Length: 465
Image (cartoon, rainbow, N blue to C red; front, side, top):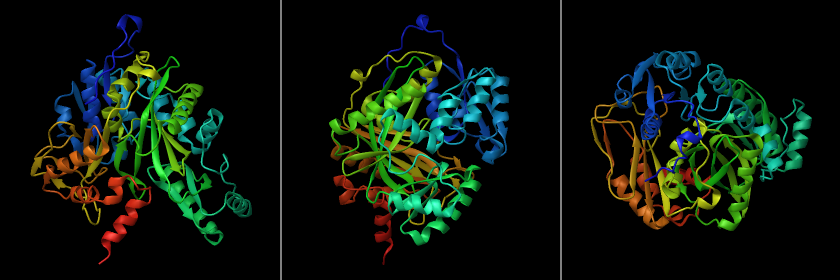
């Protein structure tokens, strides 16, 4: 289980707040609340009408309904969140992940209201949230990037065609403001380019409010590797090892693990050091994750998530650090109590995302949980907000729990996860547990011989009669 890093004496740093409004819901709201309580901070939880019965609300110091079930009228309502903070006297806002967590305008509004945004400042979010400016910042810091220009695509079709020709097919078109697997399209040959550009521009305009695109080389068999960083506001920064998040369906992660198997420390350490350098150059504060494609021994930067990741627990289990507490301390203005020499990676960890969805069709499943059994035992952790009688809402993401395991070796961690999934029972709704159990019996996955395309190919083979 994660442990707390020793905190410098409070007298050395004047803490900026003593209460936190958690601007999120579900398992991450419960997780942040636990970290705040461990730091002796008061918590303000907010909810939509669909989440009035959330268990974490009952243990919060304040619990307010801020709007209807629709996320756009509640969890994405900036004015409602700021009003809730003002009414309850909260000194800081923690955005969690998703929703407004990487919204530079919201971070700026929080600071202008005299509150602390628990995350990087608006400038850092803007730099790293835009794929083009992020790529430029990474190049300046010496971080390796995917082949392709560090500029947005022009409107002239002939100029776009020339860029694709110079990169070499296949290429991938991406929205500069994209994220979550949306706003991207692979183009295998020149004849497909014009239609792909038009479709992706419109998709980007509707999803992100910007039709700006960029183009990169499409790597055929890469793995998805992440590097977790932790930075304070005094120029100190460390990287906390690496994760493999290659098991993806439709660009959405399903299983994550730490460390990434089969990558020598001598290969990845310079990349981690470059990530730290990039953070220091832009004055980054808090936690963040650099995402890379890894192929044939080379790393290629694709984007940075300027927030807490869903998969942060696997790094907590292997590093022994409570990343959420460290994120909050950084926002308090407390200097890091560790240096890079203090960071170590011990054992192996897996995380499975338990989703309320059909294990075959992957259609979301809403309803009431009529029975629940969560796994227990040495090396097993469950992050969740659900309970027997909990009503799974159709309004939000289908993630309802995360099962995390830790063991001395990867093989032992896989066996622990198999047992944990076997002990997990959620009645009344459909879940993806059976799908995850089948995946953890797969031979190639067990050997660590998979890339980001493997899971979808595996699913296609399973669906054949």
